[in-house]
Length: 357
Image 1 (tube, rainbow, N blue to C red):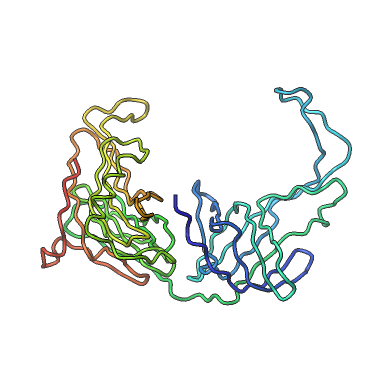
Image 2 (image 1 turned 90 degrees about the horizontal axis):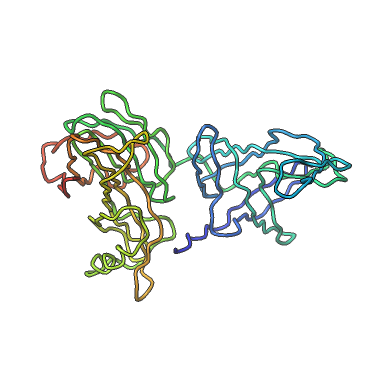
């Protein structure tokens, strides 16, 4: 897979738990962005430093523990040894430039801080296990990071309503800047609300009981500018597409957008057999609508990431949906309130791709 574009260093002031203050330009070591598992969720979220105003790293629990070893290999019995060591667990609060706050458990990260006194490593850790000679108060950790060049600006809400396309089941969005899928809150009167989102653009996807409406813009993540797509690129990707490992044998590339560094393929996948509550579902099938990102590494195309817009278990007898693309759902910016209508007085606004069957 192609490595994600490495984010530029950002100016920061770091405060350690012992009161030490450091300043300089902060960057992640490695290509993985800062990653957090928010409280109440079982999925990871990734954050770019350029989207963050501050990070507060607080002790969640602390205790003095006795060292131990297993009494016998392969068995659970333990033997406790002499002495004690400090054990600290942390929770992390991230304030974003759109004013929202996300709190959870960080995936331990190593960062590089380059200042006037040289370069050093900073560790943002989910847990710290001290040495036998230490007390809890002896453990020094990063307490806070303030991104001095960031400001709460550019973000905003994305919300709207769907009219004339049946009952809305779900609305999702591909964050084109950060390669993440967001889910909206949907109400019974076919309104949806993503809340406040970060700056950038979002391709929206709507699942109703009769249709799938999706945006599929050419917008790509930051740092992924490239040569325009050329005639024959879709055919070339299609030769590699069947070779990609996947649980779905039936799959099709429906459209291609983006550029040669980040080509966005809209993919429909279908599997006839699946089980619901440990029972085979007769007459039904499982289908996905996804976006696969590819890059051109001369002479071949290579797949990088896959993003699931819709995962639907279609019951036997359930109506097949019509998949339609529309510019109203392309590259939607924060601050948008949308009214998505069937035709909206102009049938050219929606393009039928295929029946999802």
